[in-house]
Amino acid sequence: MVMSSMNPNNWKGKSLAEVDTPSLLLDGEALRANIARIAAFFANRPSGLRPHFKSHKCTRISQLQMQAGAVGITCAKLGEAEVLADAGIREILIANQIVGRVKIARLVELAKRAAPMVAVDSETNIRMLSEAATTAKVEIRVLVEVNIGLNRCGVQAGTPALALVRLIASLPGIKFEGLQGYEGHLVDLRDEAERAEKTRAALGPLVETRRLIESAGIPVNIVTGGGTGTYTFTGDFPGVDEVQAGSYAAMDWYYFDIRPEFRQAMSILATVISRPTPELAIIDVGRKGVGAEFGPPRVKDFPGASVARFGSEEHTSISLPKDCKLGVGDHLELIPSHGCTTSNLYREFVVHRDGVVEDVWPIEGSGRMR
Image 1 (tube, rainbow, N blue to C red):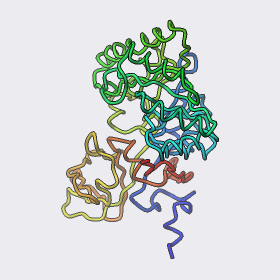
Image 2 (image 1 turned 60 degrees about the horizontal axis):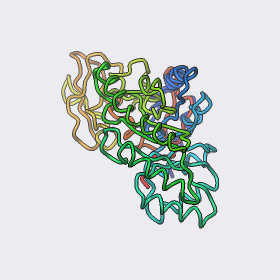
Image 3 (image 1 turned 90 degrees about the horizontal axis):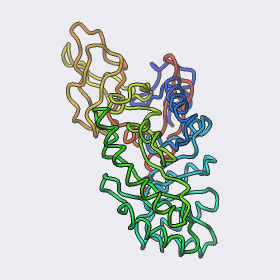
Image 4 (image 1 turned 30 degrees about the vertical axis):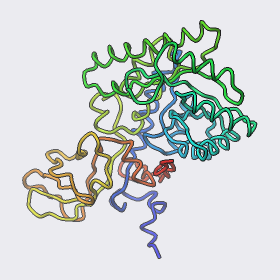
């Protein structure tokens, strides 16, 4: 039988010192401040915010974002869209192509209880969606994805995009809503002036494509894109209606370095399990518990401490200042370089304030790879 102290739901009201590790922490005050800050940015602008779910994968956070004025939620996977719908969120954009009989059948079922949109960039996929939606007597909303420099998915701007839009308009079961263009290759440029200039240059062909489609007599309801690194530029760009920023809510150190107006809410609580030398501590979390695509984690709020070695699956070596009294059994916190992949590794956020657990929120989207 699992001891009650091991159940995260029994940690409410307890000190973080009583929380088992590794645990994914969320500073509730910092989270709410971040949500309020970006909501204030969009409050008096023509563009709206459609936050990305993949950053935190937690429906409680999505609900807070919707309450703060978000126009809907963006996600990366159909499985994420399903848990959002389970939480009562209807306005969902799956910012990817949904391809294959099994996935499209699930999308059709989702369309019966929510209002999903999906990205398309090929005639084959468009016809798949039309056939399935027509058979099921539902309507699926689609956005034509335009490649604006990321060179991942997306049709070329201009007439190739217009050709797909015309095809969509001619087919039953699907509805053309607009365009998606993601400047993902620019969102983390460290120089702000360069990031702003290149973002605006990338968005130009996307908005020009919008004008081309509108001149053909086809309404474009939505042009969407953007991220935390570019939200101030994309959100002010004429012709862009929605921004898909997501990392701002919980933040990691990689984004914090270029967007310091937001607070770092996410961290990983770990325990010191060994003190092999006076200036070294070993903690109980490694690569299996920290998203580190952009570099090793950083030690939070511990002057003089830094990550000395980050390569093991279950251990991280921490370099400590001289005469440090940190002992075996003590806790410390790490800030990951990549929040999106970190949240995918855990099943709950331990939400805290002033060192006390306020609540435990499930991360329903973690592991939803399909």
